[in-house]
Every structure is written in structure tokens, then in C-alpha cells.
Image 1 (cartoon, rainbow, N blue to C red):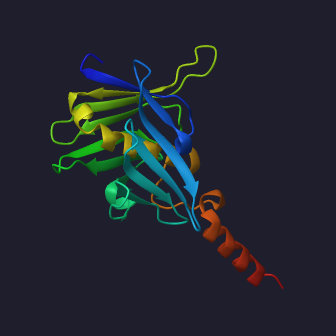
Image 2: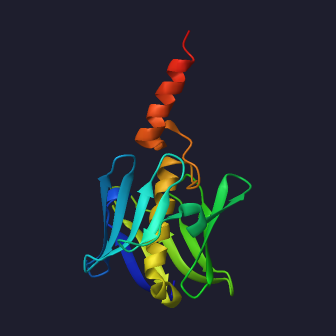
Length: 199
């Protein structure tokens, strides 16, 4: 890992209220989640408290926007989901210069490490190692290369999306098919349909 220049640590395993620190223990990012009428919204803030992204968790089509008033786009447009054999996926995203990057090794096992590579030269950009429980007790760590430091915000955004998908939706962030991921609107619809089927 000699080419990796920076390390960030996720101090808890709750994506909805996360605190991400550097190797000196200084807070770099935080997340805060609020319940809206039909969905939950997670705000990703930097160390200055500036909102750099907002993630909306809906019943069937989650969305992301950049900044507090940015245009909302579907997560599947921002982070393209690529299915592979064996229940594994890749997640492809781009930076502001239209360079493409790919998260590799995505599945529903949150204990497996993940990597990010730049598509153009297959260079390693980031490495995510999972948290280790007691007695070693080490938090999840995100190691960044020089290129990774340039696109740090994007890597953290996509990391949060993927971790939540691994935890709640079997590694997929395109469709939330399980009842727990439907949100308020989906649960109401399920109850209505269930009642319609009763004799």
C-alpha cells in the first residue's frame, strides 16, 4: 500500500449518522439523516459543515444531489451498477473531468474489502478494509492514492451508497425490493394490495 497517500476511518458502522476522521483523529466528513414525508434524506457534510451531497432514500428509486440545492439525479445514473457472475457487482462513476472509476468486489458481505480503480490505466485509487470486531477492534478504513485524494468527495459519496446497499439490499443500489427498503410509501402500497387480495 506504498502508493496510498491518505487514510480515512469510519468511526461507526451507521451510514445514516457517520463520522469519518483522518489518521490524526480530525473529523473530515459527517452524515446526518432526517425523515421527510415520503423518504429519508442523508446529508454528507465536510469538515466545515458544508453540505457536499444529499442522498434521498426512496421506495424504488433513490436519488443524489450535489450541494444543498443541486439537481437530483437517480443513483443508477451517478453510480452505474454492473452485474457479474456469482452475486458480485461493480460500481462505475466519473469525476468532474469525465474520468471513469470502478468499485470492484461488491456483494452483500460487508466484511470483504473493496477497491477502486481508474478505468483508463487500471491504477489503484482507493482501498476499503472492513471493520474488525473485538478484541482487535479496528474501524473500517479507506486508503486513498494521490488520484483518490483528488476525488475524495466522490469516493466517500459512492462508498456510503455501496455500504448501505451491501447492508440492506444484497449489494444493489438500483432497486430496493425488500419490504424493509420500501420506505413509508412502499409499505402503505403493500398494505393496500394485501387488503385487496383478501376475500
